[in-house]
Image 1 (tube, rainbow, N blue to C red):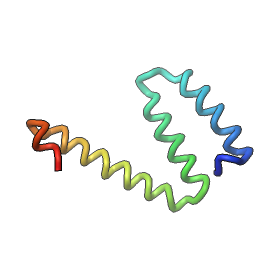
Image 2: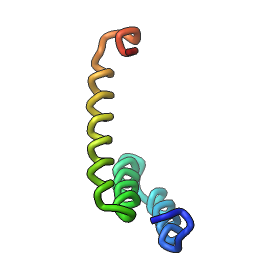
Image 3: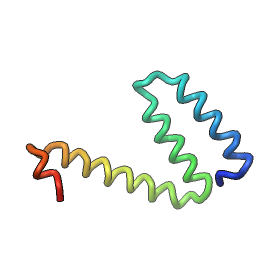
Length: 75
């Protein structure tokens, strides 16, 4: 899906409307799923890349958050 296609023109308003209809607690899950769908609609192989990237970033963020002080969190 490219930004200048009809599919995107339909996709964006649907995502925006659903985003505001969903409770705040679950919005991040919806945006993550919409992002995965957006990348997957162009090339399915990119879905695996973005899932891998999400997992690496999440794990790194959790490990950095567990460090005791700010100074040790910097590389």
